[in-house]
Image (cartoon, rainbow, N blue to C red):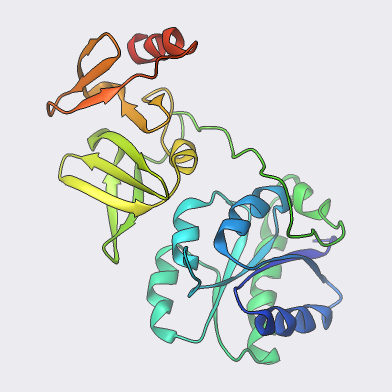
Length: 263
């Protein structure tokens, strides 16, 4: 790998940022790409910065580091979790994080973690490293306007399920078993064959995780599995379990109906 490895820090405590920036500056092949002081900022910044490494604190207010991993789409970033609580390590590795650093972070353990990332990046094909190597810009200020989330992926992808964090557990939910998703401000309710799961996520984030054209957003508050529809009548969709979901009355209604009924 010829370019520098970009590092984004996500932590709600300023001392943690100062320590990590000091450690990053010790290595010429690392570059500081910016700071986020909560997970909501990180949701905006990660798709824009596309860091090689995300130093991610676990215990943050409103949205934890684990909740962030459950929402954000960052396939090319290596996550190094940082926390003062070793019991979070098992949860972290559920998300296939690259390394785990226990606070206070010493330089020896920091060096071992980032060297592992450097080796993994060097093993990637050169065409996959192009985006990271071109990302040697200056640190990004935290005050950024919202950015577009990644486009909804298609059914051609290999994944047929998603992991949902609810009730302090991780649930493996198959897409084919999901009836619909309902948005409730900062949370979503996932209705599936085994019941209902409530998880901290946005409807926009769920749209990026659910495959198209199987899942259609019919309303600002609903995403529907069209394979689970029983009847469409007017602006109402009746699901196989008898529950009803709205279709928004808007200029896009005809397009939504087309997506729901096309072969």
